[in-house]
Amino acid sequence: MNKYCIEQSYTIKEAIERIDANKDRVVLVVNAENKVVGTVSQGDIIRALSAGKSLYTRIGSIIRSDFMYMNEPDMEQAYKIFRKIKITLLPIVDENFHLIGVINMDNIYEYMEEKCKN
Image (cartoon, rainbow, N blue to C red; front, side, top):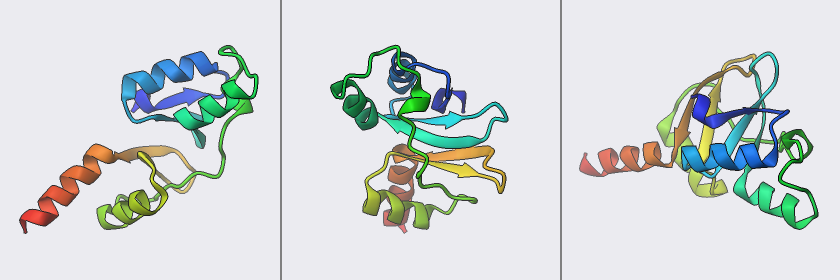
């Protein structure tokens, strides 16, 4: 799951590199206690750069703390969230916001393929 996580001290450039590696167009931002505190998407980065931020701006200044998450994996509910909000990654967190897992578009596609078979 490290391929989805960055710390608030990372730069926009480092976030871009992590997004490029995970192929899901978003990263989860974790704090020192390894709790998910927000997300940064490609769109957030583009908006920040076009507003004059540099590649070396700390990601903490563009973090989105109002992110969608689930406490337990529920593919039917996740599908509805992905479809309605048009996200590409949904973190699964415990009650203290520690990352348990993620659901991404590949998981949604697999779920829908299985559902269509039945």
